[in-house]
Image: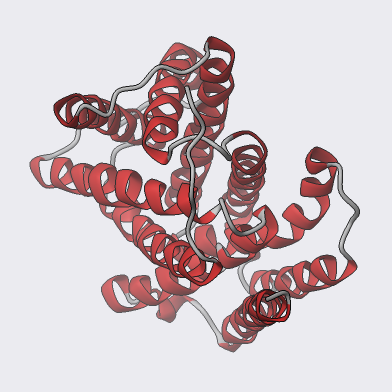
Length: 301
């Protein structure tokens, strides 16, 4: 397959990533509204997404061939994404939307350490410091929420997995059309996840596996809007921005998601002033990184 040509500007990439992150913040609300256990929630979400993509791309004539080795690689990344979702929704069920989403704010710090290992680049001290600032925000928030211990640890695992997805996408996806990448990655990830389901269900016995009528509607929103549409935006954005910038921007996902949880579920009643101080640290870290990125882009022209 020929690599994709052309590209989008840095400013448009930043807009794309922020739209995707805002919609991903809404997935936390849907995750709480859907009472199906995390493993089955991910199974239904990926099944709907995979079938929808094959039908859509087939009708539009967008099905393309890809080297087998690349298919296997993308399937592996898709599987990591699926396990990230299991941990994310598991954290919501074990704690709440706010806790699960704030755990994702550690992605900037983790990315500053993990990305150089895979991209063979030097550790950027400023990125580490900004990551630490976001991590400090998490620490402040946790100070008064240690009762959600298990949910916090599961949420941190979700953060680690999403960093790996971003880094691997940055390393291996560049040069291929987002449509093909999305189809192969999610389809392959679903197949790997399905094979692993017996083990997952043994480790996490299922209580509620069949969605209600309303929950089926939420699942289709998760699949069509929160997965397919945002995945296109995300892959496009990674063509211009670093994995660290993407992951640091992902720390806004808690901001968007928590605000939605405040409005819909009134979760602010479970939190105190420390939460808002921590949230301020996260927002500040993201704002500084975006300023540095945009300033550097202007200076290089």
